[in-house]
Length: 127
Image (cartoon, rainbow, N blue to C red; front, side, top):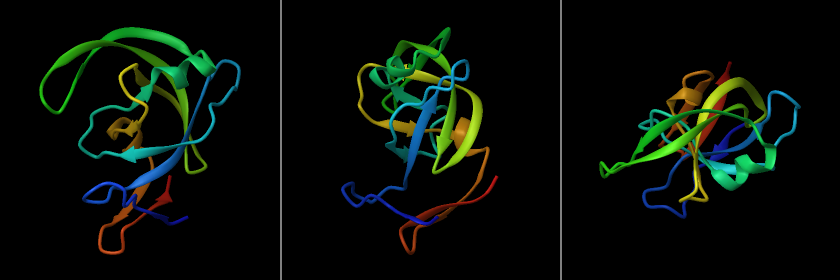
């Protein structure tokens, strides 16, 4: 399904609906709009959202912002459902400093995604 970019940002950005699931018990978070960031190494999820599904906690990692500062964050093993496509077993990081989801290349490299900047649309075309 083609989705329109979010025009509340300048320039507009591609976004997709996403849910996060606990692989152990099948619980899923509510759907939230995620920013598609092809420059981000990993996926960043608000910690409040992860606490709702209580996934397995992994190792401590360092999150580095686009400005270069680093801070420690925990990783969590989740299933990621992006626009209806289930991508199991992805380690994401929880961030208590944001309410936005950033989909990074750890998720984006799994399905085939078409970014159509001319028409300001994004679509998962294969997986």
